[in-house]
Image (cartoon, rainbow, N blue to C red; front, side, top):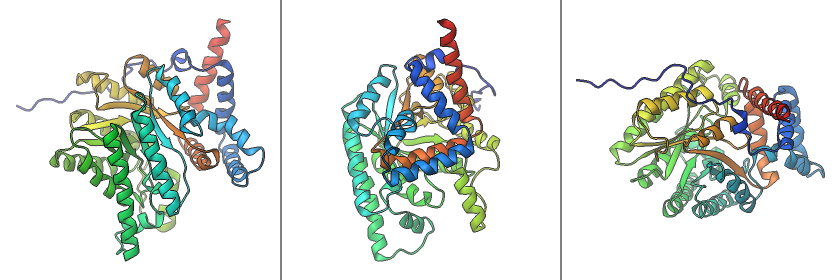
Length: 403
C-alpha cells in the first residue's frame, strides 16, 4: 500500500511576519529613519535608475563625496563592512539575535587572472574566518569571480576549446577545488551562486563534480537553483538523483532569481525562447514545488530556503510541521539578505528556526557593482521595496505611539 504524502495548506499562517517590534528590535530610531529614506528612494524606479548610474560613475572616478555618501546609505544598509574585521562586529550583533551569517566577498565586474586569484584568496580568508566564528557557517562565491565570462560562455555553448582555453578551464576547476578542500577541512559550507543562463551550464559542470567529491556525509558544496527559470526544478531533481547514486548529499540553495530583466532582454535580442517563466505565479509555483521536494527528501538534501517571499516561507514552515521535521534540523536553513526582510529573519530566529543573513563585504569601490545590481533587481520585484518601506513606517509609528 502506497503511503500518502503529507499535504500543506495553500495559504498557511504559521508565524506573524507583521510583528515589527521583533523585526526591528535591534534598530535605533535613527537607523529606521535612514532606512525609510533609502527604501523610499529605491521604491521609485526612475530615481533608482538615475541614482545608481550616478553613484557608480562617482565611485569609479573617485569623486570626493562619493564614497562617504555610499557608506552612509546603501552600503550601511546592505553590506556587512569593508573588511573581515568590520564584518566581525556585524556578525556578533546578529549572533546575539540567534542569526548566523553567510559571508560573501562582494566584488564583481573583474575579469583577469589577477582578479580571479585575488577572489580565491579572499574566499579562503573568509573560510578561515568562518571556521573561527561559530555563527558564520557559510561562505558564498561566484564562479564568474574565478573565471572569464568568455570562457564560461564557450564551455556552456559546447564549443571546442583551444589548448589555452582548456588550460584556463582546468585552472577554474582547480581554484574551486582549492576552496572546497579548505572548506571541507575547516568545517565550513561553500555556497556557489547561480548566474546568467548562458554561462550556468559551465558553472553546473564544475560545481556538480565538486559535490560528488566533497559531499560525503555532509554537504560541503551547495549549488544554487533559480526557480524563475522553467528548467531549474528538473535540474534540481536530476542532480539529486546523481548525488544519491554517488552516495553523497545534495547541497541546494533555492532562490527565485536575480537576472530576470537581463535574461529576457538577451533572449529577445538574440531570438531564442526566454528561460524565464511566463509570469510570477508560475515562478512561485516552481519555487514552492522545489521546497516541497527538498522537504520530502530531507535526509539526502541539505538546503536553504533563500526567499523573501512570506508565503513561500509560511508554506515551508507548514510543510516542516506536517512532515514532523524539527526546527533545528541540520539540513534546513532559512536565509535573507542583510538589510532586508528583517521581519522574516528575526521572527524565525525568535521562534527557534535555523536562519542566516547573506552578508556581503568588501571595499566600497569593489562592492558598488553588487549594490547597483541589487538596487536594480529589487525594483523588478513587484512590491518588494514597498513592503520594506511599509514595515519600517509601521515600526516608527508604533514606537511613536508608545512615547
